[in-house]
Amino acid sequence: MKALPLPLHHAGDGRFRNPWPDGTLQRFSGLLRWQLDRPTKSSPVQPDPSVFRSVAPMFPQPRASEDRVVITWVGHASFLLQIGGLNVLTDPVWSERASPLPFVGPRRGVPPGVPLDALPPIDAVLISHNHYDHLDDRTVRRLAARAPGARWLVPLGLAPFVATRGARAVLELDWWQEERLDGVRIGCTPAQHFSARGFGDQNRTLWCGWALGSGARRIYFAGDTGYHPGFGAIADRYGPFHAALLPIGAYEPRWFMRPVHMNPEEAVRAFADLVAARPANTGEGTGRPAVMVPMHWGTFKLTDEPMDEPPVRAARAWQAAGLRPTDLWVLAHGESRTL
Image: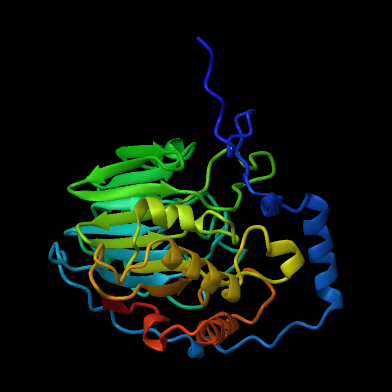
């Protein structure tokens, strides 16, 4: 029997790749060029950490009702999503540094918006990929011990990582595969990025976003991604979305970061792609327009732009696109909002 051809994002050697022309990654020489160029250029003025607002979390305990969707930003790409009566975490990172070592690497500028011990009972954990600012060894161990019954949904290749750190119920998914948890549909969606935790494992595990749907309520969590032409297909499969959680930070220098990180203008463009494919304010949805929730900014300094620049540029791009100001939800750390 003839074997089926591999999907385009499978490289054929056990690794994965971006299937779009603009998804080609910079080589190691590009990384060296970036690091060697940095001392020769003036660094942008970085804001005082006090400019990043934090508020006391106010989410329903122990769960939201099944007809409510509550979004709480912990920081960076970590959210508590309450949907369909479930409590779901995305890319949980509670450690002080996004690094393999506790004394070096990007340090958290703002404490987690929700202390880990203050979390409600966790039903599911979604991981987008294995970078240290999205998948944290110590946090996985703490969550696995605190929530032994939680389901862990991860992209291909990441089950061993979380299972060896205590996660009991782990499911690996490829792009476009999905699972149902107590009536909540969770789909693994394409993203344009890469994976690595060291020098010899690049792209040996997959990267992804996640779509969640319960009744007429649907959320899209993009994970970590560059701009790509697949956002419309994601909305067509899993939309219409009522909230899109999109990364807006870690984008400079542009020549290096463009394939893997959207800038704020590209994030607004991705939102427009999602809405154009399946508008949320039609008979299919709840009757309200979609909202965009920016993420991946204001927590860890990873790249060269000022840490307070992303939401300013996002708001400017949002206005230029003619979108309603009230549909751009720039959350404070710890802030909860309800759909």
